[in-house]
View 1 (tube, helix red, strand yellow):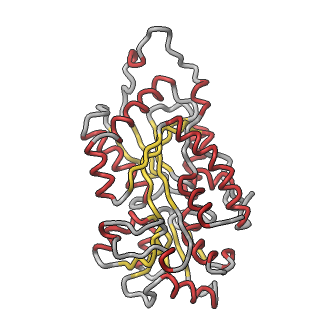
View 2: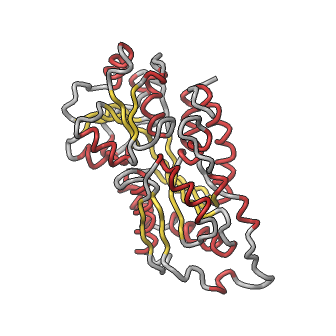
View 3: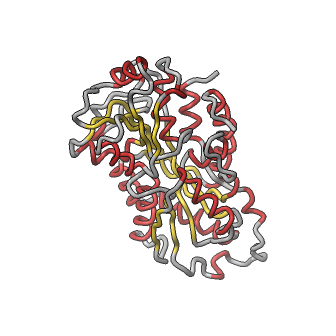
Length: 343
């Protein structure tokens, strides 16, 4: 009933393809024959929020997104990134869904936690992707189980054996709240290995960057995070990546890192990242961003940026992203129920 492959599908794709049908109910409807560009949107600087601290997957995605849009002149208005950490994205969502509901000039990036936080029991958020206008899925990434370079652990099973003997002995950490994405990446291999996931000690931080700092500072033994976030630390020799949750080995800097499945642990986990607008985004703004993002993902500059960051390009437009999120919501509910974390 609960398989790692389902988890992969769930989270992976998962979840969050925010595409809100509510946007169609916008009060701003163009008259017949009137061009969407008539009012000249956007007329102000655009803010793209990463609802986490600096250095994690959301932050890197937001900065890559704004960088390429600006450099290619696809968007001519200034673009800035703002970090708003707290509760694995839940704090920002509460503000966005209530105070920024019509703010066409503020977008944000997210991933499966936008679905998970709304459905889980602990740290539950009353707001989720249905309180937004999903604009596009941009990329996919994979989970990574990571230790310090000088750790005594040299492979995934050595960690799991230690956890199996005493689940509370090691401290796992991640850049999202309990029951959210990094937590699931951390505990799923243990769950598959026969360990009660509720017994594993997990400490949450506001973003992958803070989780890595905790690991390097000796405040955590292992972190579960997205592979792209640890790429530079791996190249610098500061961390050892024990496993990647992809179906096959990754290329480039991760070519020597085995998958969890290679090590006998069938824990596949895919992470998607996407861009969202406010629930009551105007029709004009929605059309503008759909067109701008379509140009972005087809540009050579974006493809190069995705490769540089160690991500994989997986684009879904607003409509497809919305359908995907709707499908994944029920799957996430099943996952959380299996872990005893559903609300």
